[in-house]
Length: 115
Image (tube, rainbow, N blue to C red):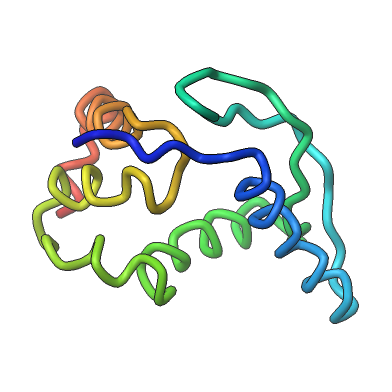
């Protein structure tokens, strides 16, 4: 699947979503993140919603692709986890190899046993 080229201004727009959280009284943390822009790996400081516990972070991380409207098309191949991973490429992450990397992690950690 060819990767979508993300412009810096698109990425800034995504990061600004945190401002909405902050405007609603939420908190955010800053952390280094790797993104792919115009085919190049770059590291940026991103703003992420701050959650109370690591468990809350894992739950929220899973809820986004499972329930959020931007990922509706990516959910179409479910229950096939490999096709779902590929469908998240260009939607959930800026890395055009995201699906491949995710499948590698799922295989390496034997996560298919939970299907």
